[in-house]
Length: 170
Figure 1 (spheres, rainbow, N blue to C red):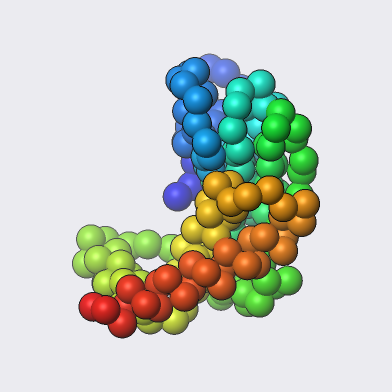
Figure 2: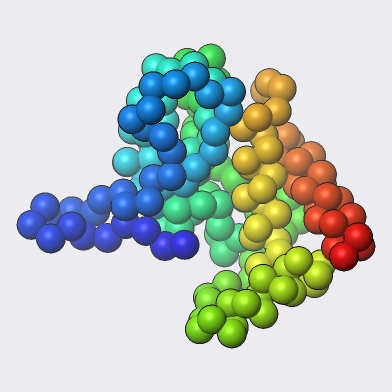
């Protein structure tokens, strides 16, 4: 979903939905999350580099707090205390940009239909967006790879295959 926005009395954007456990010092093997502000997301990645584990922090360059299929996204990959910044271009992974508004939800009936369509294996922009983010989450927990984009591409295929087999089993 969308996050961020001005915080009353603070005069600037804030990260409302940075879905990473910043305050829990426990050891984690891998984690993935999104943050709508690039400055905040990069800072979160730097903070998480001080903790063990592999983390993927992303933001859509259109302001989404996840990888977007509308345009490129920026990702920070934290491994072994090192933060590397990457640009994720969905078109380089074979995902066409959806029509403007194709991923906008609606009332409960519209959103329920979108979930049913996804679970039934229906192709479309929502499925591609979900699979792209699932792939990036899988990369966070995958064995080390020096090529983040290639790793996301591989996991995108794995996520699509898993989704297809799940849809076939009903």
